[in-house]
Image (cartoon, rainbow, N blue to C red; front, side, top):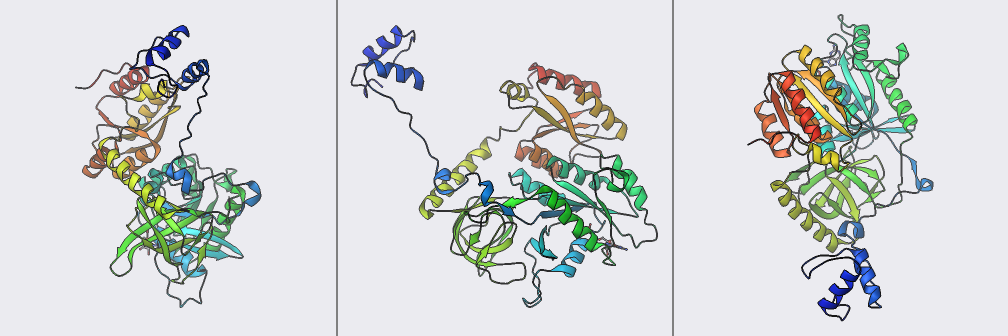
Length: 471
Ligand code: GDP
């Protein structure tokens, strides 16, 4: 500062002292102090605005209400294994593919659209909550509506419960498809009854959860389900601005021997054109060819449209955010920067909440809600722990159990914790090896206890910043 003021360090320090700031040449002074001192030397200090590469090439300004037009809903199908997710997606697809003149060969690109009247619905073609939650963990908010498939002859099962919690954690609307209605043992009323235990009260019982009876096998009730999806979508007033640079999410990606990296991208805002320069995670390139789910070449894709693209220099990961950008050289610089950040992040994944940093995060006002996943050997313990933990809520932080279940801590629990920044506690259960490995890699805090009291006590101490350090 002295140098720029054409003064000596001693003169600057003298002025600082006169203003009550006792600094030495080795100290740093803030902008306001520097401005004050500069004024005394009849100079003016200006703040340098640092613009990141992202800000220079990615247009992420808020869209004007006037530019927004309705967009199709994006739907994911979730539920317990064998309850008919794949069958339902197939039934929907065969009844209602958008474009039947394209040679009839539908391709699996990870998502597809169906037409219902003059409306589109976009389905993610990977059933289950794994893909969904992996995407969410990467910050991608892709889906608007979850169709929860429950087999009418089997009722709510453990993965159904997981799916409900995943959907709720992501704030997406739930529509229940009670499947296998053709089976002799079908008991839809039992399913409705069970749903109420998870705060999903069926519409027909005065609640707000639509429940549609279907048979994926006999292709019955499919139209009712699709109609319900458009109704729910209408209520959500989903909108996007087609007249801006495209922004979307990578749904899946692979390397093709001949064509290089191929990615399916779901455009969420703006319109993607062939020739656009794009950045997806740490991959960069120009959109060379773009095809839709029917294998048809297209030149542009608007909001809620899934497309398969070639032209990237690397295979992005599912869930990576994709942006069309204005400058190829800067785009490459940005990708380089992200690659370096990724390397660094591998060494220090310390942004996740843990019992050890909980208090600090609360102090900094960053934690308003502490989310917890409880796994135990018996249902009774799950409930007991849930109640005791939630009672720890105070003015600063609310304690909320977002998922509880019986059995070992599994991969799905870790993914949910990772996506929701939650802590996992286990009682008389252990993580399976995959879960343990994933938790380590993603920095998810997992605590195992034998006695409920120990858990409550430790949690309470952590919230007070008095947790004994572990050695
Ligand atoms: P997913 O694991 O949830 O994807 O379930 P699938 O779609 O693979 O279906 C599991 C099994 O249930 C398969 O044998 C299907 O043929 C059968 N299934 C699916 N939907 C129906 C249905 O509506 N009625 C009957 N009877 N069987 C069905």
